[in-house]
Length: 483
Image (tube, helix red, strand yellow):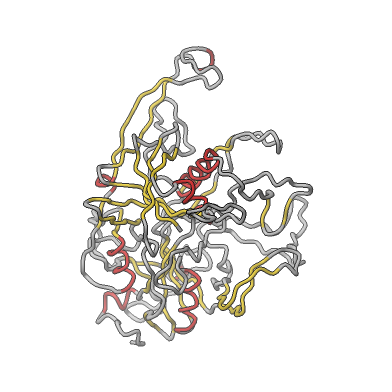
């Protein structure tokens, strides 16, 4: 994937779904969501009018509308980001959202799961004696003294993030708050009639609005990863990569966000993606279980899955199997909602597409289950992900507001117990964005059910310990069982 730095030429506007009338400012100064950047590159590719690109039909996994025309373009576009990048003195320092289990300036987690057996060894069943939702097994406790203050910043540098994943310790890492990266500017404007382009008349007479804009501070950029390999397109210098051809090895103006705000896009050459690298082995152990945690680097969307249609009949998939209900929301769709088992498969060896069944699917030489369960979670308030679609007369689409999804924000932490070291490694291979590789130029795993190609669902794995082990004695550094 191409590493790209976006430098705004002016303030940027990233409005969410909330109104912009009267005293409501539209909240346009928030850090942009991944789908905003993906839409910007998609629009830039259309404006570039690159020749001989592969047209495709609307649909996925081999399911297409009857008689659907090949009138869609750039379906191979995949992106990730944006993340804050400090490009000062010729060096690029990448920053990522703070994991939710960090509350102090040190890189040692303050929020950790609590065993069902308390410090006084009297059994306490959290599952049936608390409001924990299924399938969680442990509550999460705070090892710090009660306080309303926190000296932890909003963003961690890549190096600090990796130290947080690889080992526990009291060392501090480079961390910044939002105001060190960008500022918010407030503006009052006059409403414009989109049909006539005039103000003060008709439906917009007497209407004003207030808005917040995002202004990046000097030397800061939006860091993005993007790639679009087209099987028909050929470029003498850039091959079949549409993104490289779009930027043509230099700089190009990209329209991003609302109000036609532009950024200058520049490709930065790198052998590996500048994302934190997660643990692939060496996880801590307790009660013969390996302890793995998964931290989101970008938001993830897991929708509710219905098992019955409007008539009350059970829904059957293409293989003739009954679909099971899943609540979605904060709980990944690849976690069994009843017992917390991981439903992902560990695939290794040669991978290929299999067209023998009712739908096209990817298969590999090795396909194994993963022996691990979700036992605890730290989930912040959800993010609203929405958008606006333009009308398409050819398909009879009227356009308008798109469906609103609630996403789990970046920084959320999921805690797992794996059956043994081998199963923990398989779990990490399935959850790390880089799989089981430590240096990768592509993203292997995107664990969001929706919008994964737009950069949702990226995560990295670390390890964890129980509350009793963190506050009650010597840290377990050699992954041996202390109990």
